[in-house]
Length: 400
Image 1 (cartoon, rainbow, N blue to C red):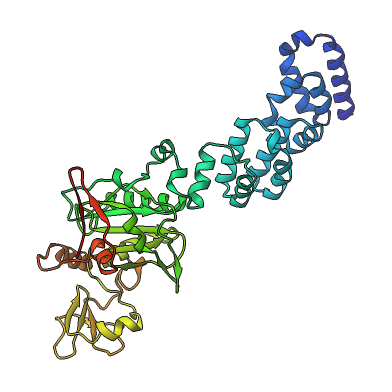
Image 2: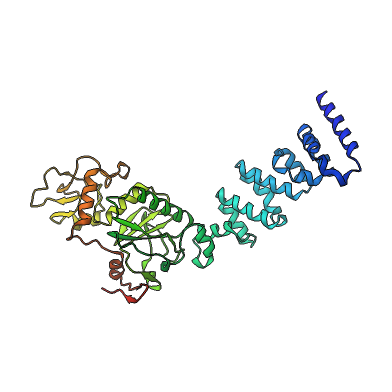
């Protein structure tokens, strides 16, 4: 009886409004009421007042949208795609947008591309890119970053909006800090991760305030060919010679997509899926700390054969006694390695966090006038790379 009553009401509405198209906007609430009361009659109401229905597509059910889409309503098709994306039904969304994308207006195309980015539908964006249908805008710029495209593809406006730099010339050092660190990334998630790390560090600096200062993140694209090699992240730093570098920076943090974190010659390589705890662990390597789990075989062959304090947290007792309170370490197989604490530390298991004992060891190492950490420029010289290092007033070549 209720369904029949709804039909009678709908018929009455249609008859009462017939011939009043010039005043149809005055009856919009009635149309919307009957869309809610008689969903199956959405098509009939659409034919009578299409502009009223089109302004309310977002409130329609999925079945109502599908019905209008099947009647070739482009706006309904667009809303249906958004609805499927919101529901996580990406295959259903793709069935509609693949064939209809060209019929959407520019604003709709840009918003749809944005939703594909939000839902990390990279294969869908790649399909649009390859067919020259990915519209200009933030989504396209984000796609470029995700693909590690050259910096020339990224607009200054987009970089400024998202708080990263496109040129090494744009970053500066802070003279009040012991060490200045150049932050670089080759993809979208890397930029976000480094920005997060910088924020976390600034909220709780270690081992003390002004120990490290970090630059704005510089997007460098794929120019250093960073990739996983034997499980470790490595980059081709020979290409550094093709670029000018800002003066005053001590270390580099390079974030890429894959490969385990490591420090080599004043350069931290870390991937964007790794945690801040890993970042802090690697930061300590800049100041000479060694891992307290078994070291790589090749490193053991030379490091574990030395004598005395070879790192702030590693003592080799071949012909001498370790410092008082130090405990056996598994870093070396020869049973002659010692570490400061019996407990696990951040150098053995990153999630443990930085203890006060290791904070003081770190601070002592930084403040010691006898310690000289390896800078990235030293490493460049070691591999035979002599980049031009510039300042605002001069330009000089670094050499060994």
